[in-house]
Length: 218
Image (cartoon, rainbow, N blue to C red; front, side):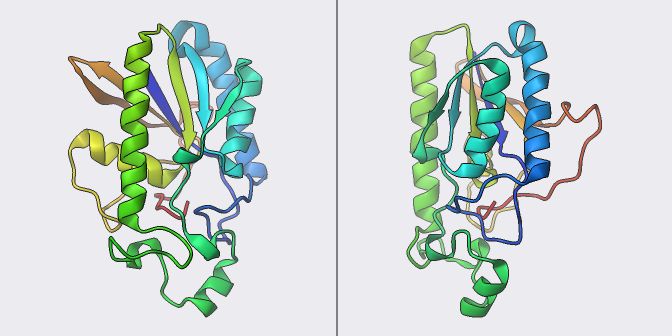
């Protein structure tokens, strides 16, 4: 019994992410297509994915839709798997943010300090912790032979790693590696959920492509 986490494909990093509804760039579509074909060729024997759940932000949906087309599985949209709510700067060009809000970054906020028109890091963590616990409980209750694939964001995956590894999380914590369209597997073993695959990018023709370490603006 497993849950696969997938970070969305590459998007235009000259704009602030967070709750931006900007979609994938060309590279992101290519990455997602490669992952979809990789999963399709191995789904019945290895991955056994029966559900695809996705953040409803466009870059995640674009990724999920590419995977769904290969696996012939519908995408279930769920807003609780969104990235950090960065309020009015979501989708704004970085240059404009730097002019209007000098020094405003996810890591610059206090844990209880909100983005203008957005949420605080503490609220972000709480949302993901609740959503993750519910997903795990529901998956266990279904007692299904098939697995779940969740398409989400770097900041979300980072929080889940912290939860499972028992590491206290803050918005200034060092992030765990999570490249665009990387896969991460969580399995229920010996009565607990354990990470058994980290930042896997085998779908890139056996070569690891460079990718930035994500934060909650990704």
